[in-house]
Each structure stands twice: as C-alpha cells, then as structure tokens.
Amino acid sequence: MSIYQSDIEALTRSCQENNSRWGNVDPENVARMRAQNRFRTGLDIARYTAGIMRRDMREYDEDASRYTQSLGCWHGFVGQQKLISIKKHHGTTKGKYLYLSGWMIAAMRSEFGPLPDQSMHEKTAVPALIEELYTFLRQADARELTHLFRELDQARKSGNEVMARGFQEKIDHFETHIVPIIADIDAGFGNEEATYLLAKKMIEAGACCIQLENQVSDAKQCGHQDGKVTVPHEDFVAKISAVRHAFLELGVEEGVIVARTDSLGAGLTQKLPMSKEPGDLAHQYNSFLCTVPICSVDDVNEGDILIKLDGDLRKPLRLANGLYRFRSDTGEDRVVMDCIHSLQNGADLLWIETEKPHIGQIAGMVNRIRAVVPDAKLVYNNSPSFNWTLNFRQQVFDSWQAAGRDLSGIERSLLMSAEYDASELAEEADRWIRDFQRDAAREAGVFHHLITLPTYHTAALSTDELAEGYFGEAGMLAYVAGVQRREIRRGLASVKHQDMAGSNLGDDHKEYFSGAAALKAGGGLNTMNQFG
Image (cartoon, rainbow, N blue to C red):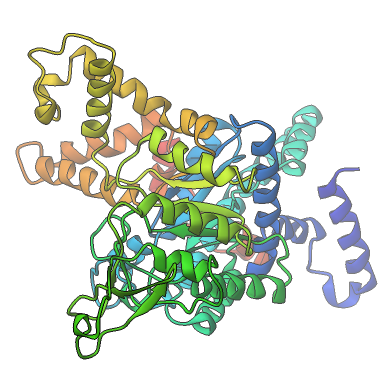
C-alpha cells in the first residue's frame, strides 16, 4: 500500500471514531495537507538536511566527482525559485544546496540599510532569513503537490485508473524542495556564549550547517577586503565548541560545522596567546609575528610588550591601533595550522578564503593538511569578488608562457579587454573556468562549491536591462519580450505569479473547509488562465 493511501486509511479510522463531531472532515484532504506540511519545525528540517550532508560527504570521500554545489540568496522567493529550477532542469535536488551569505544579509536585509560585510547588521536577521527560506521551500512543496492532487482528481473523474495510479506514484515518491543550507554566522557576533546563543537560533530555524570564521568578531571584515584580524586558535576552538554544543543540545547530532580561515589574507592579530610550553599552538601562533630582538633595556619603550621565542627575548611590532602584525610570508603556514587544528577540535569541513581562484594554490595547502588529516574537505567560495575572466586568462597566459609558446602581441595586463574575447587564449580560459569546480573537487579536496552573492548581481543586471528598454523606446515591449515571453518560452512557473503565491493552494483549502460554498479565485475570470 502506498504511503499516501496508508495515511488516508489511518485518518479515516480517526474520523470514524469521532464521526459525530468530524463528519465534515474528508480524510483524504487532511492526508494531502499532511503531505504538504511534511516538516513541522525547523529542527525537523535541520535533522533531515544534516543527514543529507553527511551522506553527501561520505559519497564524496568515495568518489571526488560527487561534489556538491550551492548558490547564495537573500530572500525566500529567490531560494524557492532556485530549487524549482533545479528540479525542472536536473530532475533532482541531490547535491544541490543553498548558501546563506552574511555579506548578502548586511547589504540587503539590515534595517540600517545597505552595510558592508563587517557584522554590523542585526544578528537576528540571520535566523530570520533561514526561517524565511524554508517557509518558501515548504510552500514550493505544497504548491507542486497541489497540482499533483488536482491531476489525480482529474484522472479519477475521467475514470482513467492507470493515470490515477501514476499520479499516486508521483505523490508517494515526491522529492521535497527542502535542501541543506550552509549558513554564515560570521565570526560569531561576540564571544563564545554569543556564538552559542545565535547558533541555537539558527539551528532552530532549520540550519544543519554553520560556517564560522577565525576573525575577531568586533573587527570582522569581508574575506576579500583588507584589514582582517584573526584570533588565536584557542579562541576559535571555543566558538567551534559552542556551535557543537548547540547542535547536540537541540538533538541535531549530525550537524555540520565549517571552519573558515581568513589567515591567507589576514596580516594582523589583536592579542598574543599565552604559551605553556615550547612548540605548543600558542608558541606557533606567536612565531609568525613580526618581532625584533631585545639586546638591552634601551631597546624597550614605555608600554612595549616582550615575549620569549625559542630562547630569545623579542618585541612584537605593534601598530598605533594596538594590533600586531604577522610576517608577510606566513599566510599559507598559518592557514595549514588553522585547518589542522580546527579539524582536530570539532570542525567537519574547511573554508580557505583565497585572493584568487587558483587550483594549484588551493591544492598546495590542502595536500599539507591531508598529510595530517587525510579526509580533510573544503567548502570553496567561487566568489564574484574575483575577476574570473582576467584571472583565468592570466593563468592560461602564464601556462603557455611556461610551455614556451609564442605570446608576442598579447599584453598580459590588458587581457580583460574585449578585443581578446574571441581569441584562442580566451576560449581556453573559458574552458578552465567551466572545468574549475570539477577539477578543484578532484585535485584540491573541494567537497562543496558555492557562489556567495550571485542573485545580487543577477538582480542588478536584469533590472538594468529592463530599465533601459522600458523607460526608452521599447516601452512595454521591453517587459513583454525581455521578461514575460522568455518566462513562457522557458516554462517558468513564475509566469503564473498568482499560483506561485499560493492562490490555487488557498482555493483547495477553502473547498476543504467550506465545500460548495467556498468563494474561490481560480475561476474562468482569473487572468492567470491566459497562460494555459
């Protein structure tokens, strides 16, 4: 017996037991509503999606071609449309996630207005967006099932039992739009207790995966900007532990923690950790500092801090703002130490923020990490902050130059110019870009590829194109030809925006509740019918 039919029969028994009071309840209608509301709470979602991520991580360990992907989003509708499109074009959501970007929340969701990515936005906006995303994804489930239920009813009405069984099979094997969200908690918005409290809210909203970075919380910068300040390892580990405690307290034992290191581009630290014995992590952290030897008391100024390193008394160089500077050649070494220590202390995945998308650079660090932790895996930011075209054209140029090819007439510094767009070099660079995710998964341990803020840019681009035409000579044709007709030709469900907003779903509910007396919106005069 099908799951759907089994639920109907169980509800039928319940209604019969309460027949005098529930005579106006149709058990099949309730079964439909239950199917449309499979996930009752955010914790249901978090436990379900954590299981998905853990399964995907195991599959990647067995076969690196089975990497996963996501796109960042800043609104529930945007996330919903991505999953609808994924199911339409690829037939399944397997391996496809959503990314919740702190940058996007700061720039698009703060009550202060647009803000830079510096943790100045309301921390409550993070769990609020998680909840919003899952509200829209659950509505996508309900909407799609509504259409299946209507098709089932039509098949029954026409007496076509074969078709009816086919629709019931689709209902029983319906694939939900609910997928994992990798959620950005920035640097924790405060100390470890603040991190724990916010993590709880995020998990309760549905987050199965939380990404935490090793910057100082109150000095946090975007990973692709200057001025980043990292914290000593014990401070970061305390916050990783806080997130793990939150997962375990809420019963999400498979919850995933992504430890992000910004050390590659961070040249500053706020405090010096206390070393308990030579060679410990605090000693290693301090050994990366810019220091000068102290030969006499005359080398010490008022307020200077001195440390003993490898038997020598040294003075760390301190800036006017009180921060300490690392040596410029230590970035990769600090990244490797960050990653190994994070994995050994509760993190599940790594995020190495880089200044360019270069597989050789990423693989060089990952190979060093895997020498200690063999199953180390990365989440990698395929960031719009990179100029992908210029970076990869320069990488191809450098590769060809190393191979001895004649590059006379090609100016490396001008490769972004449109005059190179049709060149052999540009075509090869585009092939490298196309294959980047696949190659990085195989060669550099990248389990998950994401684009942090794609819809920020797609919204700006599509709005620019519409505004240019609509307020120009094209007028209404700019919308009709550039938007609506393209929606129709591509089969986008959004062209029926009333249905997308839940009009048909609401009509069905009204009929469940009021029967023939229901006042429904989907009749013959509804202009949505013009779209067939």
